[in-house]
Image (tube, rainbow, N blue to C red; front, side, top):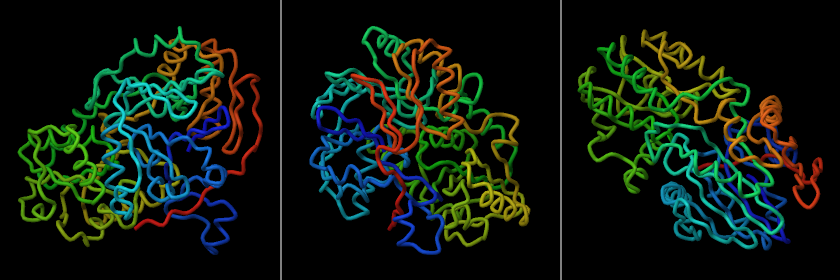
Length: 432
């Protein structure tokens, strides 16, 4: 949840959730005995107390950590939401489950479009990530222009949308970008991120070697990975199915907005259990060890639509999010105890997972193209922010501001970091 302030008004970029994180003291008081909660969001108290000054909410893309809290928190803001067609479809499906339906005004924006939201002029700039329609933004005001990258990578062969267009970002060098607010997730990693297309060969090789059922765990929002797996199913004579509501919802949204290829059929999960083992390629929710997700039920042999047997293969086409090591380890042990083979991204000789975030060489390229006066690293822990700031300095960016949640980054007319200007924290989200 990012807030930009100018001329007495605010603009919110993203309103996401995170998992298994500590709550702020006020929220903790309402949940005694719980140090962590399954799903949490940023505490919106600061802006909800000033909702009459909130000009609008912009959602950069459809990942849970960028839009997942909006269905639960929008009543506190009651302002228009701006996003692109695919993200709007994902959001509407979430809202309908929460009973809000068409109550929230969602304004669909096309890539490349420029609109005014209060005193802010926003330009939607298509970036590459791991799902359809991810966007970076130039936020123009009378006080200066800010480039907000959101989540991105340089992918010249993405599975969805167009390849990364370097010229679009090189043009920003002539537009007096005051500050670049930039993704730091992989700032400690040398080199260049792996293209999403690179996962195809690694996954196909693993599946080709298997005579039993194959179940792949991956993030349900990763449409690019799902398309790759559906293609592999078609090429290997297997039926492609989805185990878990969030996966079915994601593919449904991709079909509704033209992002799912017409030649890739999806079998109803109910029918998966009637297939021969060598005919099954299913994708399941729960790659982070979530207790109620499909993978956990499969490990316990309690999933209603299909059972796994000795010799079947479970592939973890995902990273281990810090904090989830123990539940994932428990899940792996449960499969191995039943003699079900497992393959993780760490153990695969070929790539079976690709990060959606830029490594050091990509960060250097973007800083050199955009040439901002100030770097504002975001996303990640202190080590990631520092690494991003170091790269900005090496790329001749004159100044960096690194801070914490609740800090105020003054960009104009003076440049200043005000520590803990706003009380920040996390609140629990009660999901349906």
